[in-house]
Image (cartoon, rainbow, N blue to C red; front, top):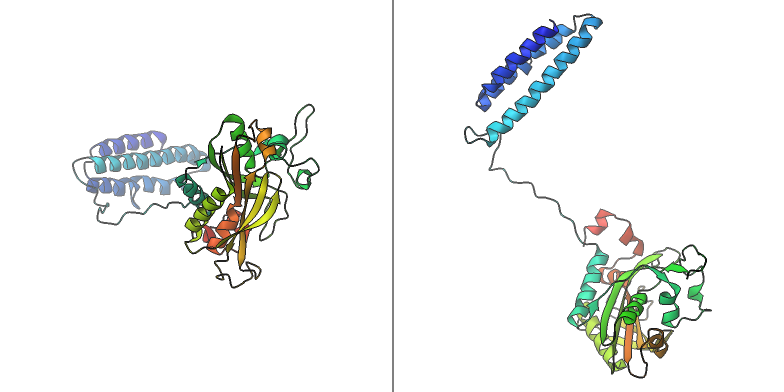
Length: 342
């Protein structure tokens, strides 16, 4: 065996492969050249008897021949299968197809879309804003004083300070979007702002340094607190069921006056008292109130000519209560055993 004999065999095999016109003759070609007793296989056996000096160039040439024949056979097989002549008998069209896998929306995404969808039906527009914000949008414009604890570095994620520039931070509420919209638009406004917010809380079953909020705002020349109550009652009963009981408790927020916490009856224990509601029979879901005139002044609105109300809720809390999820960390662990339930 020498290189010239191998090249002669390659030309012979190529010529014979060109004459193949069926899958049966292609199989006969494979057996004749690459089968257990085929011509190329026998040459590999003969190669073992040669010296290392002779084996090296012949082995390289023989390997190239085998690879070339296998590639051309695959090409011929594809050509025969796609031709209008003989069909590929190895393909059974009666076999069932493979169902492609598909993903699901994350439970947080599902909850956000459901909540914003309900408010869109009430005439609200969904808007978004940046997650990296200025102190003005996150604190000052919301009537939060300089000595408020939320402005401290241990309560807010600040970016690296630079000279002659207002400090930037990761927003701690999506109320910042309300400020930006009021700076750009004139009343009337009806908006809801969903998004991620950040607070350096210790991570545990009910707290996280990153979570989701939905803040709402309505402004015109005659908005009243009773309208706020009506909209929230309609929203919560659509979200949680028509038998949901709702109560408003007086509270304080720097950006609304008067302000209220909004509770619903615990639908896990039917208001009888359980570990989730702390035995009270009520669950705190959101905060709300009439927009403080100081906020309107910060964005250039005349507080004597416009009125408004705002509200905000945590998306994770809603999702946890509705689905009986005991730990907020489960939303971010990417455990498919958990996510496939939704």
